[in-house]
Amino acid sequence: MKSLYFILLIFCMLSCSGTKKAITTTDNSSTVVKAETPITDTVATRTTKVIKLTDSLYVPEDKTDLEINEKPLVKEASTTVEQSNKPQAKGFNHGVFNSLLKKHVSEKGNVDYPGFKADYKKLKSYFSELNQNVPEDSWSKNETLAYWINAYNAFTIDLILKNYPLNSIKDIKDPWDQRLWKLGNKWYNLNEIEHEILRKMDEPRIHFAIVCASFSCPKLQNEAFVASQMEAQLTKATKEFLADSDRNSITSDSIEISKIFQWFAKDFKENGSLIDFLNTYTEVEISDNAKKRFKDYNWDLND
Image 1: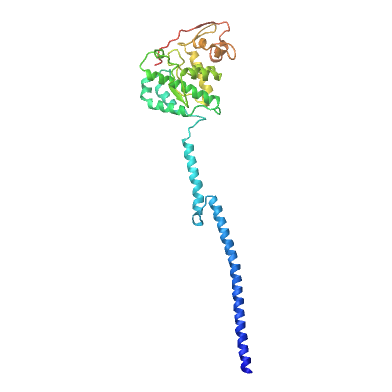
Image 2 (image 1 turned 120 degrees about the vertical axis):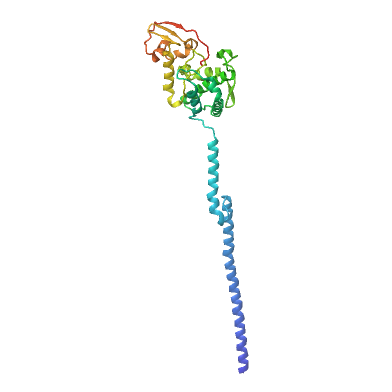
């Protein structure tokens, strides 16, 4: 009996041990399942994270900081290079031409054409700058005036140099109609710059700023025209021309003036009579009844 009881006890113990193991196994399986679910979620989350990072041009964690910092820097550097190579437009600098004028033009307006010829590379570099900076609608009137006045004078010098030596600009065939200079995508001649552009800007004083390389022309200023000084420069050029007795003789009751005032009479009557215009820029008060005649024009070279 005791032996039977002992056998039953051992059987029960073995059964319980098996049951417990099964339960444990089941629990472990359950635990594994529960443990696998977060792992799966984690993998899914990391996968999603990687996709998002990839969409943002990021890379795995060990290089993320490097790439985040480098990408914008490379882009900014590229932008800076593009901006530095972009031609300057508004507020264009006429410094190259200014230095040439100061070097090769006297206070009286005499031009050293051989000197300009020796510095022709610099003059051509100025033409290149003009070519890349054609005025736009955003430019102010004075910026546009400075551009076209300087272009006209520089191109006139160039025309003389291309035909030098010579005694007069009129020794050149069709001097004002030759399309020798390219600005942007268009070829220009001197007539177009003067009549189609400058004269249409309602500023009659341009006639004392642009110079046709001749003795009777207004003197070529030995400085470039600039937007910030345009009013003062135009006034100075006009007063100097009218006060020059070789080009104009003015008294209160008699004026013997340049043919410029005859050729472009309309330009000087926009805001009154010719006498009104002259009185604005002369020291002498000219009478409305003053006798008027025009001087012969001397086309000798302004050297």
